[in-house]
Image 1 (tube, rainbow, N blue to C red):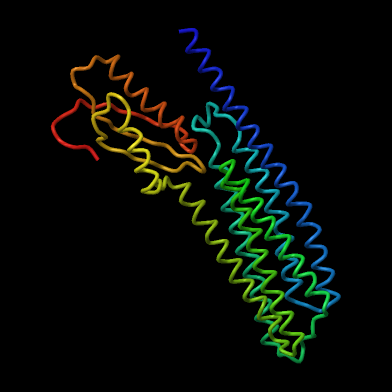
Image 2: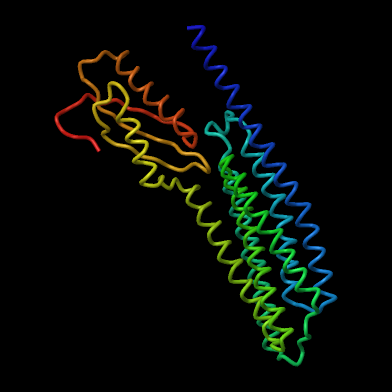
Length: 313
């Protein structure tokens, strides 16, 4: 008995250490993102103003919003990493989803404002448009390279720690890289004599940004309304449960996303002549196998039915 309590305590300690480690990793990634975004937004705004490029100024505004969004990510990850308490017995993971929704709204608002600015400049006529300077092209290339690297770096970290908010921030970086590509094309075309391409680039940037915002919002919403896991993952869990000793078949299985984690509710069939202790042992084996074999599973609830003639799922 003492040994089992000791093992349980050790496992709990490992989970707390793991959560703290993941939070620390996310904080380091976010701090780096803030520094790079501040430098990029300042560079693009100054160059855009001096080179008379509305597309580059729009791109600078987009980069500036990344700074605020990353601050929101840091707050969300810090809060979601808190341990369960009496008021929040299931933990705080969904705070990450709340942050992701806020990021999506901010991202969409910025994108729409950039698009409106581009439309206004087009309606004003090309006579009011200036030819962007060559420095704007250089700034766009630097922005594309840096933001694309930030996207891959942040996404890799988000996958390793299974963070919804950090993944949303990664896609925010990708949308910035795409907007810089649009800015480059618009500036390059304007320098070739097609001045209208510069504000058109702002509209293209708007489309990319709003599209990224929609993806972030949909993913966060799915995780807030108990959306089920994919059929592939559900099948994997079902096969794992069915392979456990004493499980005759799986009667029913339900999954629901809880932020970046997953809850599993399963009904299994076992020999009806088993004692309560033996049936409990089978249920415990199933629970341990699912929770230890699949890191994304937060908890597995197992109900044991006496077996009857027929087949499970």
